[in-house]
Image 1 (cartoon, one colour):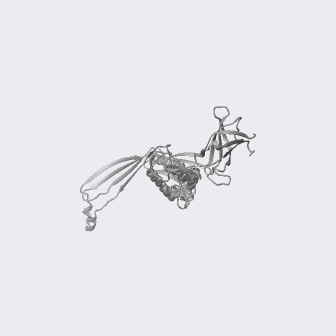
Image 2: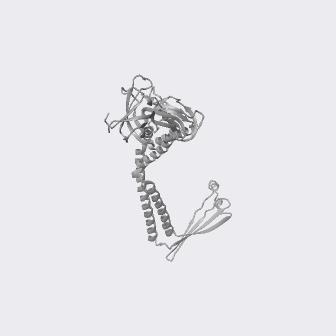
Image 3: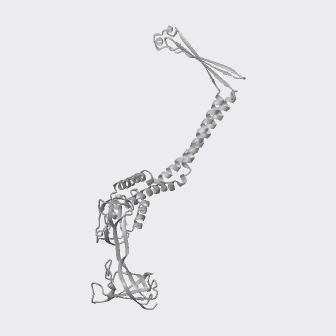
Length: 416
């Protein structure tokens, strides 16, 4: 577009970026490190969040102690990580409970790493070997239990017994007054095929009678007899015993399988567990970081709204920081014809510190809107806040042009 001369109605300079800083959580303001006019550096939150995760995932394998406990976070925020530079923190909330919980989890994580996760490969190898050995022994135990039962049942059958045989034991206990008298045991097997009786007599002589060679010492003075009967079915009992053992072994097989079927991925499971622990710690790290106020932009503190001891709500502004490294020139002009975004705004004026020498300033137009009346426009142009020699800042914040001594022209892109 050809050069168009416009009549300035008002021209002001404002910073390109303004941030009203607030905490993500509420609380009581504990400390403040800046005041009006303080210059603050930009804090790279995304980089710091990534540093949390990277430190958690790649810590020294012989330690397990995470770098960013509360002291580690303080070293990067409240204390300047660069010698001679200003710390990025503007203020902090009282946050001792969050700090204590974070430190507690970091210590617990180190203990878990020492006792388990620091030896993932060795533990996995041992568990796999133990699981293989237990599988072998359970299989052999089941086989041997069945072999024992089969041999016993065959032995019963070789002696003319079958599973319907009933064995009756008759037990008679005889007790003498002077000493323990022998007892008599009688066993009778009753079946359709055979009846067998066995009687055993065992005499126990008192020690005193033996010493004195007193034959009368073994003479029974008084006997008390007690007789009982016991019926058993050895064939069926052995079969039942084997069934119970096999059921127990099968239960152990099932339990063993449920405990070991994932052993081929045990290393991955351990890594997932430690990653889950690190995620919980990462939440506490972020929660603690949320109690420290940093600025996402570099600039100058131009507003202070809270002081130590004040109650602060989440999202409530505490400081205002303005960045004047780039400035926006907001001009209300009277200009015939449309003004295109991307055009160049040229201003010739006398600055407040050099009134005798007019200067010419160019800035790219980034926004245009009609002012509601014919030929009146609000034009916003952006440029670095430095002069042509690179010195700056060229304009102070909130600077207004004296439009009586200011001339405005608009050129097409690349025409200056």
